[in-house]
Image (cartoon, rainbow, N blue to C red; front, top):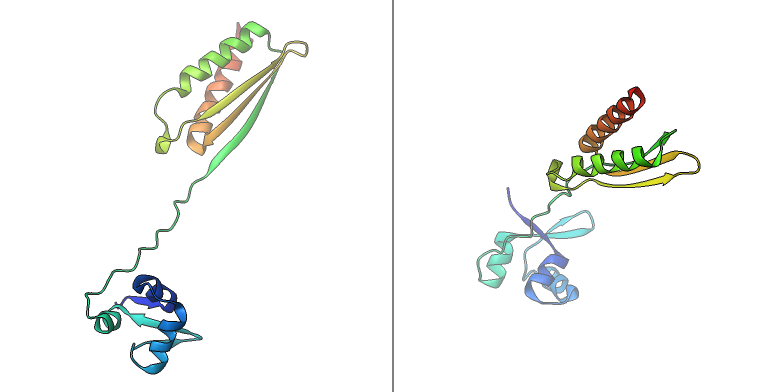
Length: 145
């Protein structure tokens, strides 16, 4: 399949102004195909025009599709000691390698007066789901003690 360049790409490759390249196309010095309102120049035609081998166009790389979660877990009826234990257990659990090499981030806020703990988690979906299962198990364990 032939590789096509836009007039702008050719101008950038050759260090010329876009109008200069369009002039070469209109004069017939640089062979180009008109597609819609745009000119397209094949790599072979560019090589013939410059007398140099064709330069590959920069590859278009699609951005990686990635999803992340921002989650807030509220735990009611939890004392200071239990909140600290839960926070340290979560910290230990997320310290290892993660999916895609991206670490989980979390923060805890304990309101001693209201006996409420909020755990805020940012990270990949699978890792966040695993962490939520762990938090649920820790809360259940704490209630049975």
